[in-house]
Length: 179
Image 1 (cartoon, rainbow, N blue to C red):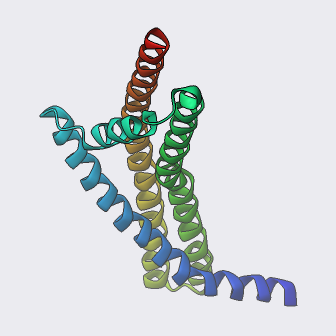
Image 2: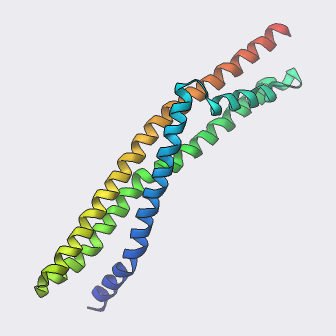
Image 3: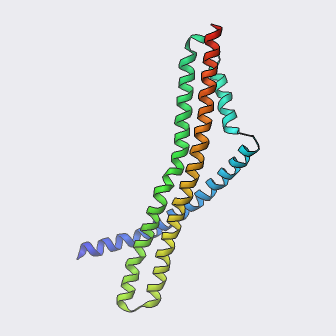
């Protein structure tokens, strides 16, 4: 039964890293929630900083020789889409990892809880069950918060990218009518 003992020891070693990782994701999500709320307020009062910066960079990309304008604008829009996807992937990561860490944080102390039950150690059983269920709740909550943040940010990103595409098309059409 050396394999059973080895797996048990490995699970025990993983408990602290899993717990710290879960807490780190929660702290990171709180920062992301604050950043999202700040951006929501900015969008409500009409200060779309990210959109304005993107349109400003698009205007810079549109400058230069008119013969390669379509390629420069297309390259700019593709780069903006890739950057937006990277920003969204950071939050999407927490949608899956938060609940996964919560599940790991549940199952690891369950082993200790069952051992306490077998020995008749009810305080140990109760303490480990509290940790197990708390990990589940925190992991699922992290996943829900990350999912909601992703939905909101995806909508904003889609709108910002649509504005960039529209401005690129407008500039391209203007250049074609002038040339």
